[in-house]
Amino acid sequence: MQKATILIIDDEKLLRWSLQQNFLKEGYEVISTEKGMEGLEVFKEERPDIVLLDIHLPDVSGLNLIEGFKEIDRDAIVIMITAYGDVQTAVKAIKSGAYDFIEKPFNLDKLNIVVKKALETVSLRKEVTQLKNKLSQQYGFNSIIGQSDEIKKIFQIIQKVAQSDASTVLIQGESGTGKDLVARVIHFQGKRADMPFMEVNCTAMPESLIESELFGFEKGAFTDAKAQKKGLFELSDGGSIFLDEIGDMRLNTQAKLLKVIESKTFKRLGGVKDVNVDVRVIAATNKDLTEEVKKGNFREDLFFRLKVIPILLPPLRVRKDDVLALTSYFINEFNREFRKNLKGITKETEKLFLEYPWPGNVRELKNVIERVMILENDEYIKPEHLPLEITSQEVIQRVNMEKFDIDIPP
Image 1 (cartoon, rainbow, N blue to C red):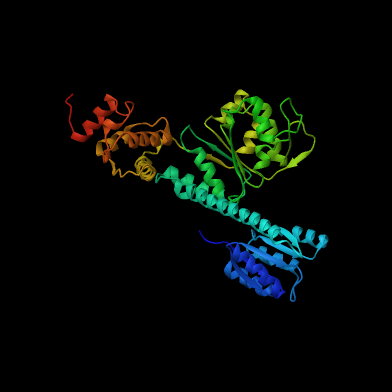
Image 2 (tube, rainbow, N blue to C red):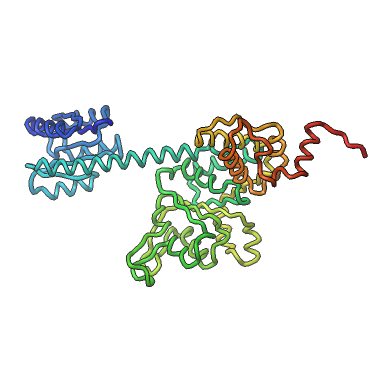
Protein backbone atom coordinates (compact mmCIF):
# COMPACT_ATOMS: atom_id res chain seq x y z
CA MET A 1 0.00 0.00 0.00
CA GLN A 2 1.37 3.41 -1.00
CA LYS A 3 2.32 5.69 1.87
CA ALA A 4 0.55 9.01 2.27
CA THR A 5 2.68 12.09 1.57
CA ILE A 6 2.69 15.23 3.71
CA LEU A 7 4.16 18.56 2.58
CA ILE A 8 5.36 20.83 5.42
CA ILE A 9 5.78 24.54 4.63
CA ASP A 10 7.29 26.46 7.56
CA ASP A 11 10.24 28.84 7.93
CA GLU A 12 11.28 27.46 11.34
CA LYS A 13 13.97 24.86 10.65
CA LEU A 14 13.70 23.14 14.04
CA LEU A 15 9.93 22.90 13.75
CA ARG A 16 10.17 21.40 10.25
CA TRP A 17 12.67 18.82 11.51
CA SER A 18 10.48 17.96 14.51
CA LEU A 19 7.37 17.54 12.36
CA GLN A 20 9.27 15.51 9.79
CA GLN A 21 10.56 13.07 12.42
CA ASN A 22 7.07 12.72 13.88
CA PHE A 23 5.43 11.95 10.53
CA LEU A 24 8.19 9.56 9.44
CA LYS A 25 7.63 7.70 12.71
CA GLU A 26 3.91 7.55 11.86
CA GLY A 27 4.76 5.91 8.53
CA TYR A 28 4.23 8.84 6.14
CA GLU A 29 6.38 10.21 3.34
CA VAL A 30 7.45 13.77 4.12
CA ILE A 31 8.55 16.74 2.00
CA SER A 32 9.41 20.10 3.57
CA THR A 33 10.16 23.62 2.32
CA GLU A 34 11.00 26.91 3.98
CA LYS A 35 9.23 29.31 1.65
CA GLY A 36 5.66 29.49 0.41
CA MET A 37 6.23 29.85 -3.33
CA GLU A 38 8.72 27.01 -3.25
CA GLY A 39 6.10 24.90 -1.49
CA LEU A 40 3.56 25.77 -4.18
CA GLU A 41 5.93 24.49 -6.89
CA VAL A 42 6.61 21.31 -4.91
CA PHE A 43 2.86 20.78 -4.54
CA LYS A 44 2.37 21.16 -8.29
CA GLU A 45 5.09 18.58 -9.02
CA GLU A 46 4.57 16.04 -6.21
CA ARG A 47 0.84 16.32 -5.44
CA PRO A 48 1.09 15.37 -1.74
CA ASP A 49 -1.99 14.16 0.10
CA ILE A 50 -1.86 16.87 2.79
CA VAL A 51 -0.22 20.29 3.12
CA LEU A 52 0.77 21.54 6.58
CA LEU A 53 1.09 25.30 6.04
CA ASP A 54 2.30 28.06 8.36
CA ILE A 55 0.30 31.25 8.05
CA HIS A 56 3.33 33.55 8.51
CA LEU A 57 6.03 32.88 5.91
CA PRO A 58 8.96 35.08 4.84
CA ASP A 59 7.89 35.47 1.19
CA VAL A 60 4.09 35.23 1.17
CA SER A 61 1.10 34.94 3.48
CA GLY A 62 -0.08 31.40 4.02
CA LEU A 63 -3.65 32.64 3.65
CA ASN A 64 -2.91 33.81 0.11
CA LEU A 65 -1.28 30.48 -0.71
CA ILE A 66 -4.47 28.52 -0.04
CA GLU A 67 -6.03 29.88 -3.23
CA GLY A 68 -2.94 28.79 -5.18
CA PHE A 69 -3.23 25.23 -3.90
CA LYS A 70 -6.94 25.16 -4.76
CA GLU A 71 -6.24 26.37 -8.30
CA ILE A 72 -3.90 23.41 -8.81
CA ASP A 73 -6.22 20.95 -7.07
CA ARG A 74 -9.66 22.07 -5.92
CA ASP A 75 -9.71 19.18 -3.43
CA ALA A 76 -6.34 20.08 -1.87
CA ILE A 77 -6.33 19.48 1.88
CA VAL A 78 -4.49 22.26 3.70
CA ILE A 79 -4.01 22.28 7.49
CA MET A 80 -2.96 25.71 8.76
CA ILE A 81 -0.40 26.31 11.52
CA THR A 82 -1.40 29.39 13.53
CA ALA A 83 -0.08 31.24 16.57
CA TYR A 84 -1.73 30.43 19.88
CA GLY A 85 -4.96 32.38 20.36
CA ASP A 86 -5.05 33.68 16.78
CA VAL A 87 -8.62 32.49 16.29
CA GLN A 88 -9.55 35.29 13.87
CA THR A 89 -6.84 34.28 11.41
CA ALA A 90 -7.79 30.62 11.78
CA VAL A 91 -11.40 31.44 10.88
CA LYS A 92 -10.18 33.34 7.80
CA ALA A 93 -8.15 30.29 6.81
CA ILE A 94 -11.18 28.00 7.05
CA LYS A 95 -13.27 30.44 5.00
CA SER A 96 -10.49 30.53 2.40
CA GLY A 97 -10.70 26.76 2.00
CA ALA A 98 -8.37 25.31 4.64
CA TYR A 99 -9.39 21.88 5.94
CA ASP A 100 -8.47 22.61 9.58
CA PHE A 101 -5.98 24.52 11.72
CA ILE A 102 -3.71 23.73 14.65
CA GLU A 103 -2.19 26.21 17.09
CA LYS A 104 1.46 26.59 18.11
CA PRO A 105 2.87 25.18 20.28
CA PHE A 106 0.94 22.06 19.39
CA ASN A 107 0.54 18.66 20.90
CA LEU A 108 1.87 16.02 18.48
CA ASP A 109 -0.81 13.53 19.49
CA LYS A 110 -3.51 16.05 18.65
CA LEU A 111 -1.78 16.90 15.37
CA ASN A 112 -1.60 13.22 14.42
CA ILE A 113 -5.33 12.85 15.05
CA VAL A 114 -6.07 15.83 12.78
CA VAL A 115 -3.80 14.40 10.05
CA LYS A 116 -5.35 10.95 10.34
CA LYS A 117 -8.83 12.43 10.01
CA ALA A 118 -7.71 14.43 6.96
CA LEU A 119 -6.25 11.30 5.34
CA GLU A 120 -9.57 9.52 5.84
CA THR A 121 -11.15 12.38 3.87
CA VAL A 122 -8.50 11.93 1.16
CA SER A 123 -9.27 8.21 1.00
CA LEU A 124 -13.02 8.81 0.73
CA ARG A 125 -12.51 11.38 -2.03
CA LYS A 126 -10.36 8.93 -3.98
CA GLU A 127 -13.05 6.26 -3.65
CA VAL A 128 -15.69 8.74 -4.86
CA THR A 129 -13.48 9.72 -7.82
CA GLN A 130 -12.94 6.06 -8.73
CA LEU A 131 -16.69 5.42 -8.53
CA LYS A 132 -17.43 8.45 -10.71
CA ASN A 133 -14.87 7.28 -13.27
CA LYS A 134 -16.41 3.81 -13.24
CA LEU A 135 -19.91 5.23 -13.75
CA SER A 136 -18.63 7.49 -16.53
CA GLN A 137 -17.20 4.43 -18.31
CA GLN A 138 -20.24 2.25 -17.61
CA TYR A 139 -22.61 4.91 -18.93
CA GLY A 140 -20.46 6.21 -21.76
CA PHE A 141 -21.75 7.01 -25.23
CA ASN A 142 -20.42 3.61 -26.32
CA SER A 143 -23.04 1.93 -24.11
CA ILE A 144 -25.66 2.97 -26.69
CA ILE A 145 -25.39 -0.09 -28.95
CA GLY A 146 -26.62 -0.21 -32.53
CA GLN A 147 -25.99 0.71 -36.16
CA SER A 148 -29.56 1.17 -37.38
CA ASP A 149 -30.62 4.55 -38.77
CA GLU A 150 -33.07 4.90 -35.87
CA ILE A 151 -30.43 4.47 -33.18
CA LYS A 152 -27.90 6.69 -34.99
CA LYS A 153 -30.40 9.56 -34.88
CA ILE A 154 -31.08 8.92 -31.19
CA PHE A 155 -27.33 8.81 -30.51
CA GLN A 156 -26.81 12.24 -32.06
CA ILE A 157 -29.61 13.72 -29.96
CA ILE A 158 -28.22 12.17 -26.76
CA GLN A 159 -24.75 13.59 -27.45
CA LYS A 160 -26.14 17.10 -27.97
CA VAL A 161 -28.41 16.93 -24.91
CA ALA A 162 -25.61 15.65 -22.65
CA GLN A 163 -23.33 18.54 -23.59
CA SER A 164 -26.10 21.13 -23.23
CA ASP A 165 -27.58 22.37 -19.98
CA ALA A 166 -31.19 21.74 -20.93
CA SER A 167 -33.23 21.77 -17.73
CA THR A 168 -35.75 19.14 -18.86
CA VAL A 169 -35.57 16.02 -21.02
CA LEU A 170 -38.47 13.67 -21.81
CA ILE A 171 -37.61 10.09 -22.83
CA GLN A 172 -40.47 8.05 -24.27
CA GLY A 173 -40.56 4.45 -25.37
CA GLU A 174 -41.92 1.00 -24.62
CA SER A 175 -40.77 -0.92 -21.55
CA GLY A 176 -37.33 -2.39 -22.04
CA THR A 177 -36.14 0.05 -24.71
CA GLY A 178 -33.41 1.50 -22.47
CA LYS A 179 -34.91 4.73 -21.12
CA ASP A 180 -33.02 4.43 -17.83
CA LEU A 181 -29.73 3.85 -19.68
CA VAL A 182 -30.26 6.95 -21.82
CA ALA A 183 -31.01 9.01 -18.69
CA ARG A 184 -27.74 7.91 -17.08
CA VAL A 185 -25.70 8.53 -20.22
CA ILE A 186 -27.09 12.07 -20.45
CA HIS A 187 -26.07 12.71 -16.84
CA PHE A 188 -22.70 10.97 -16.65
CA GLN A 189 -21.49 12.34 -19.99
CA GLY A 190 -22.69 15.87 -19.32
CA LYS A 191 -21.60 18.95 -17.40
CA ARG A 192 -23.31 17.68 -14.23
CA ALA A 193 -21.46 14.34 -14.13
CA ASP A 194 -19.64 15.19 -10.88
CA MET A 195 -22.90 16.04 -9.14
CA PRO A 196 -25.60 13.69 -7.77
CA PHE A 197 -27.89 11.54 -9.91
CA MET A 198 -31.11 10.62 -8.10
CA GLU A 199 -33.83 8.28 -9.35
CA VAL A 200 -37.42 7.66 -8.34
CA ASN A 201 -39.97 5.30 -9.90
CA CYS A 202 -43.30 7.10 -9.90
CA THR A 203 -45.21 3.81 -10.24
CA ALA A 204 -43.49 1.97 -7.40
CA MET A 205 -43.85 4.86 -4.95
CA PRO A 206 -47.23 5.15 -3.16
CA GLU A 207 -48.95 8.51 -3.54
CA SER A 208 -48.69 9.11 0.20
CA LEU A 209 -44.89 8.84 0.05
CA ILE A 210 -43.84 10.30 -3.28
CA GLU A 211 -44.15 13.97 -2.28
CA SER A 212 -42.14 13.51 0.91
CA GLU A 213 -39.59 11.51 -1.11
CA LEU A 214 -39.27 14.23 -3.75
CA PHE A 215 -39.53 17.36 -1.62
CA GLY A 216 -38.62 16.21 1.90
CA PHE A 217 -40.38 17.31 5.06
CA GLU A 218 -39.96 19.36 8.21
CA LYS A 219 -39.99 17.97 11.71
CA GLY A 220 -43.60 17.54 12.81
CA ALA A 221 -45.03 17.73 9.28
CA PHE A 222 -46.89 14.48 10.03
CA THR A 223 -47.06 11.90 12.80
CA ASP A 224 -43.84 10.04 12.00
CA ALA A 225 -41.81 13.12 11.01
CA LYS A 226 -39.44 13.02 13.98
CA ALA A 227 -36.75 15.09 12.24
CA GLN A 228 -36.26 17.19 9.12
CA LYS A 229 -35.52 15.17 5.98
CA LYS A 230 -34.19 16.41 2.65
CA GLY A 231 -36.00 15.20 -0.45
CA LEU A 232 -34.50 13.93 -3.70
CA PHE A 233 -34.70 17.35 -5.36
CA GLU A 234 -32.62 18.88 -2.60
CA LEU A 235 -30.19 15.95 -2.57
CA SER A 236 -29.69 16.18 -6.34
CA ASP A 237 -28.99 19.94 -6.31
CA GLY A 238 -26.49 20.70 -9.06
CA GLY A 239 -27.07 17.31 -10.65
CA SER A 240 -29.95 15.40 -12.21
CA ILE A 241 -33.13 13.74 -11.00
CA PHE A 242 -34.59 10.88 -13.06
CA LEU A 243 -38.38 10.55 -12.77
CA ASP A 244 -39.11 7.12 -14.22
CA GLU A 245 -42.67 6.32 -15.35
CA ILE A 246 -43.75 9.92 -14.87
CA GLY A 247 -46.99 9.11 -16.72
CA ASP A 248 -48.19 7.46 -13.50
CA MET A 249 -47.60 10.52 -11.32
CA ARG A 250 -50.76 11.91 -9.68
CA LEU A 251 -52.07 15.33 -10.74
CA ASN A 252 -51.46 17.09 -7.42
CA THR A 253 -47.80 15.99 -7.45
CA GLN A 254 -47.55 17.05 -11.11
CA ALA A 255 -48.54 20.59 -10.09
CA LYS A 256 -45.74 20.76 -7.51
CA LEU A 257 -43.26 19.32 -10.01
CA LEU A 258 -44.20 22.00 -12.53
CA LYS A 259 -43.49 24.70 -9.92
CA VAL A 260 -40.03 23.28 -9.22
CA ILE A 261 -39.18 23.20 -12.93
CA GLU A 262 -40.42 26.74 -13.57
CA SER A 263 -39.24 28.53 -10.43
CA LYS A 264 -36.40 26.23 -9.27
CA THR A 265 -37.88 26.43 -5.78
CA PHE A 266 -40.10 24.29 -3.57
CA LYS A 267 -41.20 23.93 0.02
CA ARG A 268 -40.64 20.85 2.13
CA LEU A 269 -43.83 19.26 3.45
CA GLY A 270 -44.86 21.23 6.51
CA GLY A 271 -42.42 24.01 5.64
CA VAL A 272 -42.89 27.71 4.87
CA LYS A 273 -39.41 28.50 3.54
CA ASP A 274 -38.56 28.18 -0.15
CA VAL A 275 -35.66 25.85 -0.97
CA ASN A 276 -33.69 26.83 -4.09
CA VAL A 277 -32.35 24.08 -6.36
CA ASP A 278 -30.57 23.78 -9.69
CA VAL A 279 -31.56 20.37 -11.04
CA ARG A 280 -31.87 18.84 -14.50
CA VAL A 281 -35.14 16.89 -14.66
CA ILE A 282 -35.00 13.78 -16.84
CA ALA A 283 -38.42 12.16 -17.13
CA ALA A 284 -39.32 8.86 -18.77
CA THR A 285 -42.55 7.07 -19.59
CA ASN A 286 -43.90 4.17 -21.63
CA LYS A 287 -47.25 5.95 -21.99
CA ASP A 288 -48.45 8.24 -24.77
CA LEU A 289 -48.59 11.48 -22.80
CA THR A 290 -50.56 13.22 -25.55
CA GLU A 291 -53.37 10.72 -24.97
CA GLU A 292 -52.96 11.01 -21.19
CA VAL A 293 -53.42 14.78 -21.50
CA LYS A 294 -56.61 14.27 -23.52
CA LYS A 295 -57.92 11.86 -20.87
CA GLY A 296 -57.19 14.38 -18.12
CA ASN A 297 -54.59 12.16 -16.48
CA PHE A 298 -51.60 14.40 -17.19
CA ARG A 299 -51.23 18.18 -17.02
CA GLU A 300 -50.81 19.76 -20.43
CA ASP A 301 -48.59 22.56 -19.10
CA LEU A 302 -46.25 20.04 -17.47
CA PHE A 303 -46.18 17.93 -20.64
CA PHE A 304 -45.09 20.89 -22.76
CA ARG A 305 -42.55 21.95 -20.13
CA LEU A 306 -41.01 18.47 -20.05
CA LYS A 307 -40.87 17.91 -23.79
CA VAL A 308 -38.47 20.78 -24.50
CA ILE A 309 -36.15 18.01 -25.66
CA PRO A 310 -38.15 14.84 -26.45
CA ILE A 311 -36.33 11.56 -27.12
CA LEU A 312 -38.42 8.72 -28.56
CA LEU A 313 -36.73 5.33 -28.26
CA PRO A 314 -37.88 2.89 -30.96
CA PRO A 315 -38.85 -0.70 -30.05
CA LEU A 316 -36.39 -3.46 -30.94
CA ARG A 317 -38.76 -4.93 -33.53
CA VAL A 318 -38.12 -1.92 -35.79
CA ARG A 319 -34.39 -2.03 -35.08
CA LYS A 320 -33.67 -5.44 -36.62
CA ASP A 321 -30.23 -4.22 -37.72
CA ASP A 322 -29.28 -3.84 -34.05
CA VAL A 323 -30.36 -7.27 -32.74
CA LEU A 324 -27.11 -9.06 -33.57
CA ALA A 325 -24.93 -6.16 -32.40
CA LEU A 326 -26.77 -6.15 -29.06
CA THR A 327 -26.47 -9.94 -28.85
CA SER A 328 -22.71 -9.75 -29.30
CA TYR A 329 -22.47 -6.95 -26.73
CA PHE A 330 -24.41 -8.88 -24.07
CA ILE A 331 -22.45 -12.09 -24.71
CA ASN A 332 -19.19 -10.22 -24.14
CA GLU A 333 -20.62 -8.57 -21.03
CA PHE A 334 -21.73 -11.86 -19.49
CA ASN A 335 -18.53 -13.63 -20.53
CA ARG A 336 -16.69 -11.16 -18.30
CA GLU A 337 -19.22 -11.36 -15.48
CA PHE A 338 -19.57 -15.15 -15.44
CA ARG A 339 -15.98 -15.88 -16.52
CA LYS A 340 -17.14 -17.86 -19.51
CA ASN A 341 -15.98 -18.06 -23.10
CA LEU A 342 -19.17 -18.30 -25.14
CA LYS A 343 -18.24 -17.78 -28.78
CA GLY A 344 -21.60 -16.61 -30.09
CA ILE A 345 -24.86 -17.92 -31.53
CA THR A 346 -25.55 -20.47 -34.25
CA LYS A 347 -27.00 -19.52 -37.64
CA GLU A 348 -30.32 -21.08 -36.62
CA THR A 349 -30.40 -18.98 -33.45
CA GLU A 350 -29.48 -15.90 -35.44
CA LYS A 351 -32.50 -16.40 -37.70
CA LEU A 352 -34.76 -16.98 -34.71
CA PHE A 353 -33.51 -13.77 -33.08
CA LEU A 354 -34.16 -11.80 -36.27
CA GLU A 355 -37.66 -13.28 -36.70
CA TYR A 356 -38.77 -12.82 -33.10
CA PRO A 357 -40.58 -9.49 -32.40
CA TRP A 358 -39.02 -9.00 -28.93
CA PRO A 359 -42.07 -7.55 -27.13
CA GLY A 360 -39.86 -6.97 -24.08
CA ASN A 361 -37.36 -5.12 -26.27
CA VAL A 362 -33.66 -4.84 -25.34
CA ARG A 363 -34.31 -5.94 -21.75
CA GLU A 364 -35.87 -9.20 -22.97
CA LEU A 365 -32.94 -9.92 -25.29
CA LYS A 366 -30.49 -9.29 -22.46
CA ASN A 367 -32.44 -11.53 -20.07
CA VAL A 368 -32.61 -14.37 -22.62
CA ILE A 369 -28.84 -14.30 -23.15
CA GLU A 370 -28.14 -14.06 -19.42
CA ARG A 371 -30.40 -17.05 -18.70
CA VAL A 372 -28.71 -19.21 -21.35
CA MET A 373 -25.23 -18.30 -20.15
CA ILE A 374 -26.10 -19.18 -16.56
CA LEU A 375 -27.74 -22.52 -17.37
CA GLU A 376 -25.80 -23.78 -20.40
CA ASN A 377 -22.13 -24.53 -21.07
CA ASP A 378 -22.04 -24.99 -24.85
CA GLU A 379 -19.76 -22.87 -27.02
CA TYR A 380 -22.72 -21.40 -28.92
CA ILE A 381 -26.30 -20.48 -28.08
CA LYS A 382 -28.52 -22.99 -29.89
CA PRO A 383 -32.29 -22.97 -30.51
CA GLU A 384 -32.84 -25.65 -27.86
CA HIS A 385 -31.39 -23.28 -25.25
CA LEU A 386 -34.04 -20.64 -25.91
CA PRO A 387 -37.44 -20.13 -24.23
CA LEU A 388 -40.53 -21.55 -25.95
CA GLU A 389 -41.92 -18.19 -27.01
CA ILE A 390 -38.91 -17.75 -29.30
CA THR A 391 -38.80 -21.34 -30.58
CA SER A 392 -42.50 -21.77 -31.30
CA GLN A 393 -43.29 -24.22 -34.10
CA GLU A 394 -44.42 -21.40 -36.37
CA VAL A 395 -41.10 -19.58 -36.04
CA ILE A 396 -38.98 -22.76 -36.29
CA GLN A 397 -40.83 -23.84 -39.42
CA ARG A 398 -40.20 -20.47 -41.04
CA VAL A 399 -36.51 -20.57 -40.10
CA ASN A 400 -36.10 -24.14 -41.38
CA MET A 401 -37.79 -23.23 -44.65
CA GLU A 402 -35.26 -20.46 -45.13
CA LYS A 403 -32.39 -22.70 -44.01
CA PHE A 404 -33.10 -25.50 -46.49
CA ASP A 405 -34.70 -23.29 -49.16
CA ILE A 406 -37.72 -25.61 -49.47
CA ASP A 407 -40.25 -24.81 -52.20
CA ILE A 408 -43.75 -25.85 -51.21
CA PRO A 409 -46.03 -26.55 -54.18
CA PRO A 410 -49.37 -24.71 -54.38
